[in-house]
Length: 78
Image (spheres, rainbow, N blue to C red):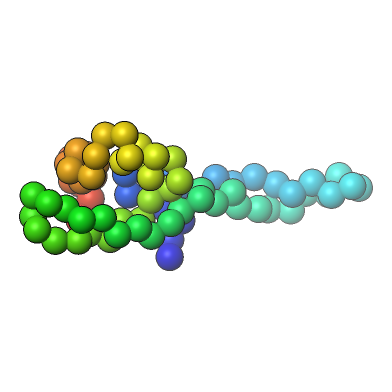
């Protein structure tokens, strides 16, 4: 699963691990991405979305219909 949120668009960030001796090696900061299934009453079907934990809380507040509308407005496929 790619670490990419369909609603917020959050993607991995990149940086460095810094050891005790201060040597730097590459690392990746992945968002907390989950796959979640929601019932979409307007279309009478379930949709499976790849969402960050923050986006799940956003859907709890704005509703799944509005969230799917935002994803489609960004050009995402649902």
